[in-house]
Image (cartoon, rainbow, N blue to C red; front, side):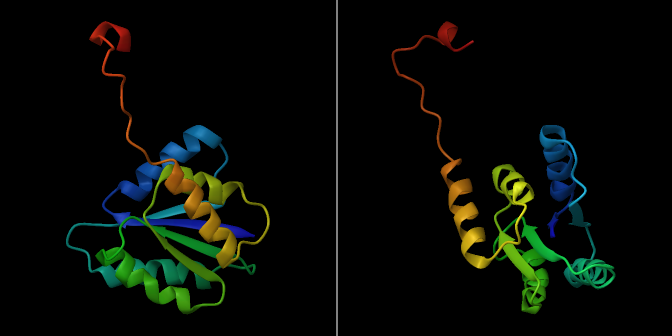
Length: 137
């Protein structure tokens, strides 16, 4: 079973959790952890490691971090050495929902496919130059 853990600076992971819950409802396989101001980044990694090691069943964990190269990602990345843990950087809602909707065990190839799909959902909205402001609303 896939378990998704959101990890971020501040309350971004908690906000993402709430937003995903609003859209898809049941989020039993989703949890979050946020680095608090003044907290050492290794504490968040230890908190997640304790959560993983305390699991009664054998699960696969996908940790989704907010920012590549950020202190949270850097601290949590060491957990990817575990055989049942993947770490992804660049949290967005499309990716998190796609990960949650996967029922089969995820592998590196499928995770990369889901990351590519989520990238396709990032784009710039360009309004037709001939539109008036009144046409927008």
